[in-house]
Structure formats: C-alpha cells, structure tokens
Image (tube, rainbow, N blue to C red; front, side):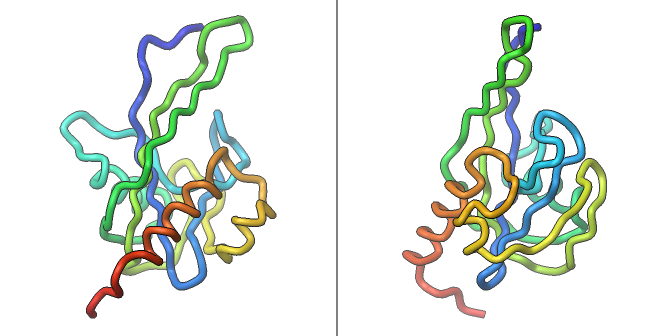
Length: 148
C-alpha cells in the first residue's frame, strides 16, 4: 500500500527540571515504544495548538508552547512495497503549567524520565527521541532564564 501524501503531526516536548515527559504508544507504527506525546494536526489548527491538544488528550498535562524545534521525516515502507507511513513530525518545546501524567487516549503509559536516561538510550524509544531532546536542551541552555 502506498499512502497518497505525508501527514503532519506535532510532538509536545516537555521538560521539567532534569526530567522529560514521555508516553508509551499503544498503536502502530510505534506500539510499545516511548516517545513524546503527540499526533495529527487538524486542518486549520497550528502545530503548537495541536501539540498542546495531543499532550492534554494523551496525558492530562497542561503546558504552553515555547518554540518549534527541527522537523523530522518518518518514512516507513509497507511489507509489499510502497509506503505504510510517512509523517512529518514537528516537535514543540513546551513549558509545564499543571498536571501529572495519566495515560489516556492512545497511550499505554506516561511518565517523567530523567534526561540522562533518555540521552543514554536506556529505554525502548521511537526514532530520534534523544536527538530532539538534545536540541531542546541546547536551546534551553542558550536562552536567558524566564522571569516568573
């Protein structure tokens, strides 16, 4: 099966101190793997709004967007030829506002993990979770501290 076009999806990258929020996917293509809460962008919806909506739907956590991080192509071939999935993922770095993660919607689990564990790849994760985290950390380190 060949898909007709890539699908746009948003990821909510949420840091809290030395921890990052991840969700374990319940459905393919990444079933059982840990990654950022996220999903499709609806027509007329900004990527940042989609990231916040998906974060809330999947974990119950409330956040606000800070900035877009670099995008990722995820292209997975179909067993019989063609393409099973093609997503363009846009990570959105977010600031935690309220809530503790409770798995909902299409995630099997959601939890805060030490950043060091993700960077050490000490978890079964979706592709580029550590790369996106490194970019988020680099931006945070280069940014002036927020007031309030």
